[in-house]
Image (cartoon, rainbow, N blue to C red; front, side, top):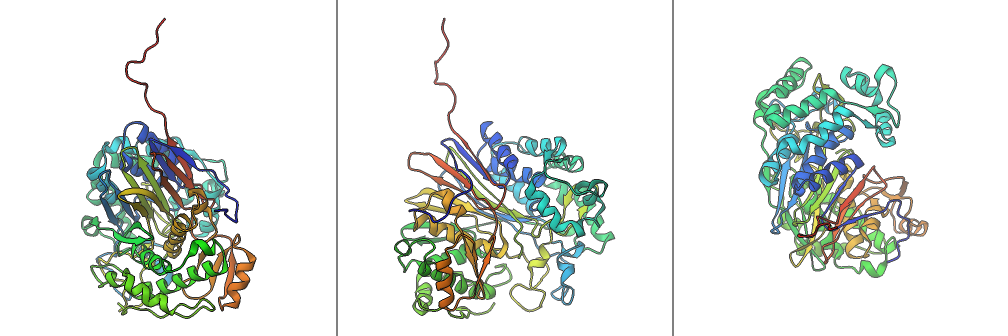
Length: 539
């Protein structure tokens, strides 16, 4: 197909491995692990630890996330490391005080990222913690050059960050905000990473780091205790498996809305010839908007921690339910959609996609939730707190209301596509509520519009959760005008969701990695290899 837009970045190819992250130094960290013989899980965890150094506004060991792992034998598993509400949290804790759920100690949920990463490494990795953490420790000690992207994010959070002594000293030394090209070193955090390399997750959940966190909470009105940390569990879940035009689509189950609602939307769209309509056409864009509105109507009442809410997964992902919804769609006008099932977050995240030559693939989305999380650090450790509590509904008695021990719900969508048991695509992105709608559109770009991976991740997106339809600027004016005639309230925006990255797998074993213009994303491919056995120089 001929894409009606120009890609800003170039893809990378390789036959022996591929690493794509939202920062070039994190991609380099993962590739270093692959070159040293590690597998995709080893490399992905190295990427994440490196990102906690170079992308601290997005991800940290005090956050939460999901890892979608496809093993070389074809098995898929989801490691759920989502954060949970502290044991002392009550349903009405944020009524009339929403800011407390966003900034400060009360905003922090019990962190699960570190345990999830260490668990992934122990169960599916092949290298030691010391080897996997070495690149991140080196970056924290030696420093790295600050990017424009980081300074833009710093400007967005500066007013709050100035009030935290550790973050102010790190990010605004002498009162001056870091500028692009400045060298940022994090010695306190390097010491924390060294402790983790030696002690593992116990350093936080039953050790000195946890003592420091719980003490800071106690002294500043937070809720997290050492008992909360000791109770953290990583849950291994089965993926949601859907089908779309003969492809198997796999994604995370609740408390993520990704797998359920991407499957739901693809089931609806399967009844239309999107390829013939063409990317960005009025009809195709109208159908994307209607599918998004339907999914959000159901998501609002049906996606939450399955330990607390009975999520109707089977109905939402069924072809029969999609047919019911599809039958009500009108091509000439938009509609207001109500939930079709009984009633039962933040854009600042990061995503990593890694594959090795053996067939192991990892797509993982991780976050401290809001930009710079709760905007404070645990003194002397370099650890930045999450603000996951703001993802809960502040009103008691609802599916997403605060409850002690409840997992935070999420839109994270680390997705994989296969056919006949062979992996074809793996992708994901940050972007809060806009994640799963954007991931769905990338899948349509790949499977219907036959875009290249680079085109699929960079293509202009739309988004709606039932009200106005946001469209990125590269969507044609003619399409925007036609959407308006069909009753859509359309708003032009500069960006929807965050930097997507993806890997495509060809029949001949070649991999193509792509990252989009919306972040500092960088793919690095590994090819070549060692010399043929028996080869030597002779006189």
